[in-house]
Image (spheres, rainbow, N blue to C red):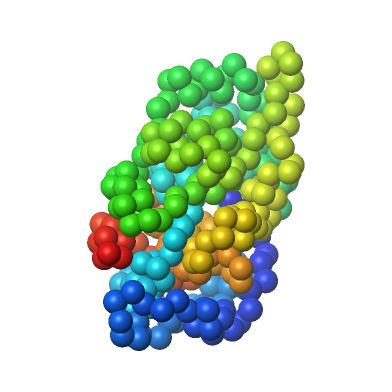
Amino acid sequence: MFAVCAPVAVSPTLAGAHRARRIAPRHGGDGGGARRNRTVVNVVAPNMPTTSNRDPSAEVIELIQNADAVAFDVDSTVCIDEGIDELAAFLGKGDEVAAMTNKAMSGGISFRDALEMRLQVMQPTRQTVEQYLALSPPKISPGIQKLFTALRANGKTVYLVSGGFRQMINPVAVALGVPEANIFANTLLFSEDGSYRGFDPEEFTSKAGGKAEAVKHVKSTFGHVAMAMVGDGATDLESRAPGGADVFVGYGGVQVRKAVEDGADWFVTDFDKFIEVVEGSN
């Protein structure tokens, strides 16, 4: 995922808020199991046993099965690579941008500053982006296609919410059958001659906290009753907030990030069990 650790205010009564808006299970019973209370403060999860969330609780299963929409991060989640780092390497700026990415991931600089700094170093043009895309087909994570198929078969709408660029995410969406309208990501801007001009500052994910705002927007605009968010990074974890994602599934199949591993409602390193849970929605 292309993201940085940005402060986010989440009520310490988050778990209670989830219980208050809990959805009636489809299969009877009370859903079983109490949800673990995880408070996110400045995107650093409390110290918890890293194995405590490797198996989904009854409530997490219930929330996923009753969700009518699921949003996914793209880099290091839907795909096995980090788009901006791959493009930087193609442009001969790989080491420099990777160092900036690592600094950004530590939370040392703001999301927008980190994005702007890397793009200024890279100077991607319309032509070089098109060349990169022509030579670099999407590297889809194992199990994603089957998971997306299962989600749709069970009446769930799939969204892509990313700090990456639409120009690079569009081919991923096409490969996975995700409509362009269901993509929330950054947009590279070019001058008439194709030179780099900047990025669209109005996109949700161009600023800190943008993924959470994007998920809130999707949920309220399209009238989703409950949403899940899946991702590998701290900005994905932010999306589990009042008015946003009701449940967060952390993915560590590419990168394992401590705050995400500890703070997720459920943490997975592959999508096999996730698919089983979704297919149990019927």
